[in-house]
Length: 215
Image 1 (cartoon, one colour):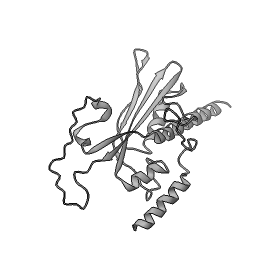
Image 2 (tube, helix red, strand yellow; image 1 turned 135 degrees about the vertical axis):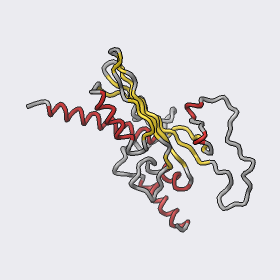
Image 3 (cartoon, one colour; image 1 turned 60 degrees about the horizontal axis):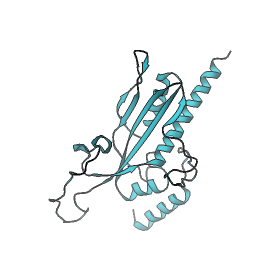
Image 4 (cartoon, one colour; image 1 turned 90 degrees about the vertical axis):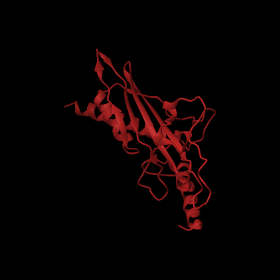
């Protein structure tokens, strides 16, 4: 695509910044803690509903963005509900030419994924707590670290992927399969979108069940 046309498309995307599938988070104007004043709490507290229902809704929503790698359902063990969780596979971020995908939120994130190779993966926890569930959604973003510039003759012989810093390996997912990617922190806008959709799903399902129980 010619650079001028690409620039025009990205400009239009940044101006509109809209998608019928995504949930608005107040124009995303960060405050001191990096969140908009009307941000959805993360973890999100939702009413206590059947555990299979809440896991089905969370799993179905996450599947709209990522391919699920591992999933542990909530279980009742010795009269105690265990924590449920979902891990996803990393996925290359969707570009402005892929409007049917929702892993890149409108605006900056989709433009960034168009101009550079980024990927995301998610970890979700569903924590039973008293008369409610806490749904913790974390989406991590990584930037590709090429061994050499594209279309260049620069050697790649000296590139290192190891790291001598004392970090949480589980948090950073520094495995062999993930070498060559630079952690960029969490994708808060996508987390907010997912939380809003999960909240909507659970409350709508709860309302439908309540209405269906009446004659």
